[in-house]
Length: 169
Image (cartoon, rainbow, N blue to C red; front, side, top):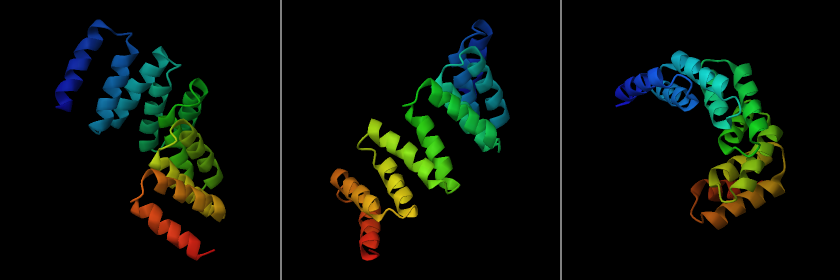
C-alpha cells in the first residue's frame, strides 16, 4: 500500500530530517501515487541535501518533465550525467526525450552510450536502429537490427524492420 508507505516515511523523516534517501524515496512514492508536485518538492530537497546523486537528479528530472518543466528536466539530466556519465537511467531518459523531439543524432549518441555499458540491451539497440534509420544510415540500421537478432533471434520488431530496411535498399 503506497499510502501507508508514504506515512511511514513521513514519520521517519521526523527523526531523520537530513536523510536525502528518505526524501528521494518519499518523492518517488508520491510520484507513483500521482502526487507530482509533492514529489518534486521532496526530490528537490533530496538533491539539496545530496546534490551529487545522479539517481536523485534523474528522479527529479522525470518528475519535472511530467508537469511540463522541460528546461528543468534537461538541466537535471545534464547535472546527473555530469555526476555519472554512465548512469543509464539518465541516458535513457535523455535519449527518449531527444527521440521524441526528432533529435535523432543526439538520441543515437545516448543510446550508443547505453549499448557500450549494456551491450545486450535490446531496447536500446532497437531505439538506436530507429535513430540510424531516421538519419538515413541504412547500413548501420541493418547492422543494429542484425545485432538484436543475435541476442534475441525471435524478436519480431527487429525481424520485421530488418526486412523493411533490406527491401528499401
